[in-house]
Image (cartoon, rainbow, N blue to C red; front, side, top):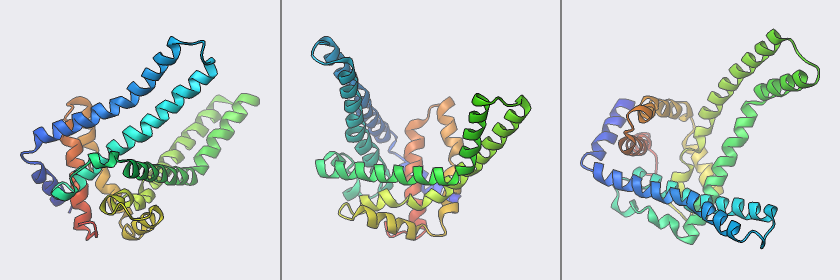
Length: 251
């Protein structure tokens, strides 16, 4: 099944390489603004250092960086995903619409909800490994510990952390449809979208995790060959076909 979906994803991108390059470059430039804004604020504040104290200047710089991340980075990623998930539907191809105040605010709420849900389950699944690590470090710093015991505990904690990370990755696939349900219907409430996503992804979490993991060689190739202009659209478009193949109501 995965092979057929990937073939559909590749076929959908035929003849659109230049468009993909322009889109990714545009998204990259917008994301760069996330860095430009706090850097600009930094130079402006330090040009007149007597106006604010160092602590106040740092707070303003951090706050500006946070705002630029939320109102530039998040809508960019959200709109970019929207573009390729609904690649073949011209009426849903607009990604710049997510910079409108109401939609941008909703995309930020979606991003934060998704982030906190996944972070919560990460800590739930990694309680054993985090406990072993914290106790090992505590005893090593305060009472000392034999080197072989320390290494054994660290190796055990690392193994538990890997297992916990994998289970977290699989379990949190229940939220994978959540942002796309918002894209399909921006008026839907976030709680309702989360609930619908968990229902639609029932019994599909492990299969979806395997589907995503099958793209690891493609993403690794970005490190050595840098085919990012093809891999990211290919991955996003294939995700769209994947859920349509699973009879998702998003189609």
